[in-house]
Length: 584
Ligand code: ATP
Image (cartoon, rainbow, N blue to C red; front, side, top):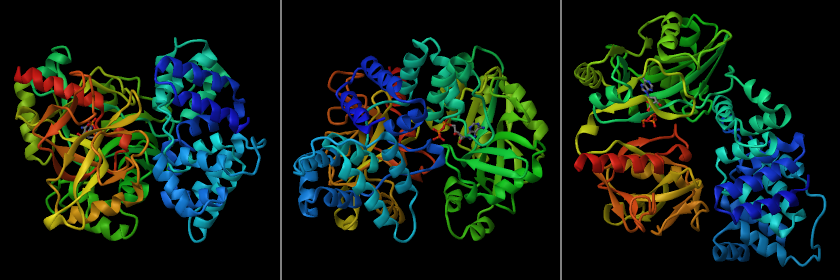
């Protein structure tokens, strides 16, 4: 397939904002794509090369992309930079520069979807010495042979800024429309995607085997499942009512890192909450699984928490973060020992447990885990009395936990869903404080006084999944230690952007923009309507967004969350509504 066909569809998609229309255009594109290139097309459309969990990152730094463009267009770098600033977008800048390239080649045959994909994949996999030059040559060669329109999308793809506004679920709808003649089976396709979150694979399965292909997709050792998430409510009474006035199971909500553990005999792979492979951070945890889990083939979930070795007590999350490192792992293992706290089991042997109720999964978990100082079952209590739950929460907090996760005993494991089958209960819900939020840094303002020379405040964004954009929600300047003030700019540096990154909506203009990447945890006094911020704009009142009052950094950088996992606009609207209900 020619890349020009893809590029012209991308241009059409960009001009559409309605979801139905977007779905039909995408469906058409899927239908036109040869079967053996479908997966490639799907990854590229999402600005990716492989499913997220494989960790293949494209993101070419802005500087390098500018150099590649300069080399392909024959325009000196300073002029390329000027064009970039003028356009505010590398894609249209490239399009403009190549249009004036003056080689007289109006269109170019030969640039195929496969060549674009293969070149980008090769580029992404380059590392080590000399890789910069190789990457540069790869991208420049594509741009050389690209038409101006193709260059627009190639450029945005290599810099990680291709945001066509196509949500993953829209791709699934389009696949249903293209290959199943309608959306009837949407729930099943979604289920397949949530247990096997490889969009290319799922679309290919629909295309080649229809619903049979979808039904055949099950939980598999080695392929991470999108985690089930919890809703929030502010009292035990509300939770029991919500779950239907019956006995529920309250579990300690431990304050560590979520691990999805995949075991096949002696091979243990650990996935993070955002489905990255993090086995190398916790080789000790992998050993614990081999020693103390009797099931040889299994998928388990556990919260890994730093502990005090002498007392067995849980330590705060900050201690655990010392374990997120590439070098000096052995020393870190000795300095910051951890315990695995198992709370779910999704597969054992050949049985997929995700369709079984919580009580059954917990029973299997109890059978499989040998309890030791380092391998524990998350403490749980089943009751229908709200007072007992409240008391259990106090006990959990006393023992170093954040609160409780209350679970509906009848609930199945709903991969990728945030529903009321699991409900968080924390103490701060009962004061005027809202829950903590995880927000993406989208910009920063230079500091003054003590903060001269570094950033004084950060602009934060929340993800609007319906439109696949980041909207501004607050400016935060408090809660940062000197160490944070030094560390954050370094973390953010690679994502610096001279213009407002595509897919970021903000009326406030910071001194420096960042592509959404770094996620931090924020606590705030309350949510208010805001004439400036764009989060949930118009959802509560026309023209007004929602923002945070007195936001404060908690000290946690949530590198276990991707920016798309940050607290969503939907959650913020729900929190706002809950808050006004309480005040009202
Ligand atoms: P938070 O920021 O509060 O951790 P989150 O967005 O990461 O929330 P939620 O679904 O809101 O995820 O809360 C569930 C999280 O709590 C899980 O991701 C897991 O890391 C952690 N957790 C701790 N104890 C438990 C437990 N017993 N059962 C389920 N999750 C638990």
